Length: 205
Image (cartoon, rainbow, N blue to C red):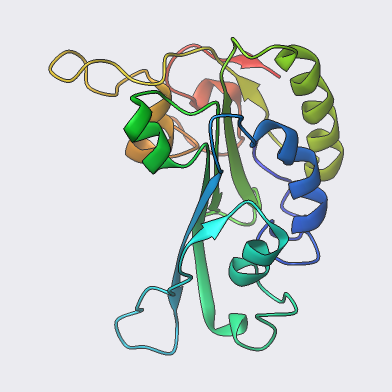
């Protein structure tokens, strides 16, 4: 989903609690603790050094560390430039140890064209989880109400392919770590924003 340009950024404390509440059922896993990481830079340094948050989990205490204007970051976060936040359920280390992909994965990225959309939110959820369809429908409806997206789309993909074959192309990992969202096809303008700008097979959501 690409949030309406009129929306307060998701990484602001006055916007995040409502989003987090909707996303929480999709970003918890019985396999282990959910991991969170946020990429932000400090505008007070010449090189734009990374802001160090330490270990983050899916909890109010952690959310207050990386969101802007929270009770813990008020004043300090005005010097930060938000790039992205990613959430893995369970955390990446647990997934690596188990040799399994996450049950849920989320990436929120800042917009390079804020006049067209405020930010992007990409969410992947495993289809073999009991009751996931109803949970997803509820979450999608609530997200649409909150974000009033200028574009919302869905697709079905594997998490990744074996190394040495097609790498990450046309896999879920391709969306999050290789190209990001939106996936613009070469030569296709981003204005107006339509589903045709996405690489691969997508359906309106």
